[in-house]
Length: 217
Ligand code: T5A
Image (cartoon, rainbow, N blue to C red):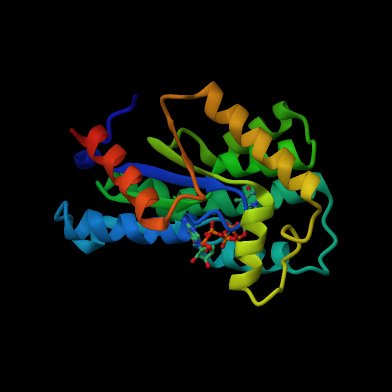
């Protein structure tokens, strides 16, 4: 188990399928880091992938637009381009200056979606991730796990039935994504905290908080 060393900064990533509750839980954890642990608000950085930089937000729009025609390799490279800029502009400087960076999706999303979902070879996905992340690795990854049918229904209810390009892919795609996440968590048990995302929000938040406190102790 990796300890979270706040004096040196930390990267905590949140992963999972569509509508798993990542944004919700990042918000709750950020509040507790400030309110209960007493971190200054500017020591907690929240970012999302794709996005978080001017380049990333622009590419995000293209990646999500239902009418964009993007093949698997191009998709992996576009996500990696967003990640590379985010690492360079926000994540690496944040960690170096002792901040806690909470990131909504990171390299594991490319393994799960472009590797598991699209079927791109693992070696190829690993090399684009290495290029994008350099030496930056999450200290802790929270995987919010749930049946994709449930997550997609939540996302659809939140977005008034409008699905983006990836949400609109069939259930078999989203099941492969979930399987790939399970394989990742099995391969790195010390990094992953896997939680049942169908539990009430407050319970999920409590489990995340418990793990963060345990690693800080
Ligand atoms: N992608 C991304 C790739 O394919 N490869 C990559 O490398 C990367 C980085 C990003 C898309 O890009 C793909 C994955 C995605 O398809 P996005 O809009 O950023 O798209 O979407 P997601 O990251 O999937 O996030 P979502 O916004 O869909 O969902 P969240 O953040 O997981 O969920 P959240 O917190 O918004 O909650 C969804 C709804 O559920 C409710 C919330 O209130 C909300 O209404 N909810 C719960 N309901 C019941 N019980 C709970 N425990 C709940 N928790 C939240």
